[in-house]
Image 1 (cartoon, rainbow, N blue to C red):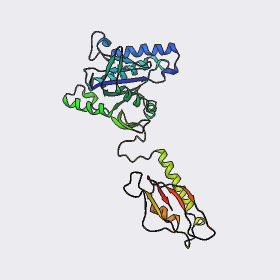
Image 2: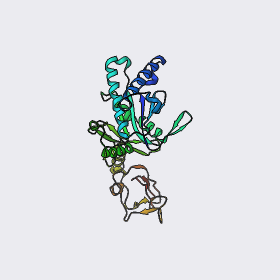
Image 3: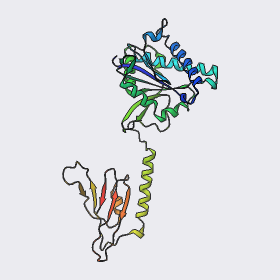
Image 4: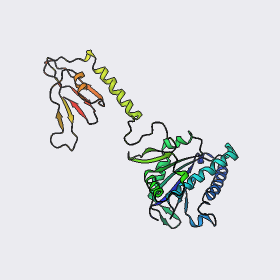
Length: 303
């Protein structure tokens, strides 16, 4: 099965329930999942023709030979069924889902289904902002889609718009970053969560804000008059690290010399952070060697 839509769902808090409750939730979810498919398969046994892959606390629904529009319509039908179920049965039997639509190739090996798209879906479902977003909205399902699925869905609509009511839904872009610091773009239904990082957006993450604050504190400390250098014996040269793959000398001096650290700090980008400062005084009053580590994205050094 090549380049087909896949819906992955995961039940919120499933493992926190006792076994009997887990069984009840799964049976109810299976019934709603079957009924949600009747709009394109009104008769017969749905799962005899349409494959699904259980994960214990959720499913991968594999839309073989079906379009992205069908996959999205199915997800919205399931969301509506969940809302009706939760309104009828109350908090004791409430079912809430994380859901994501992806595209990919699927291979069957005996009674198992294999797909790299399953890993893509799992990555989105484990994205903490997405999981928290479910608690911030009234719908029983937080629904996301990969950027690839969004592109193919839009192209599918251009060919034939099967469900005009779905084209007005709000989809907000976001970025899911994996453990290897690789970004995976996607879209979430609704306005999205606060400070959603998108390509080109001027968003400063918390760790960067702390970094800048540390820089400012160091600058304030080392620019104090008590740390002023005796310019009769000390001159500072700023060396910028060109990286290990630099053509020529790795450390390039900045033209000119500096008489105090405040001048040096003024010459480096705002992102710089003073990490250490070693001042070693010599009784002979010879020119001192002063070292500091400056980090303006690339390492810089004082000598």
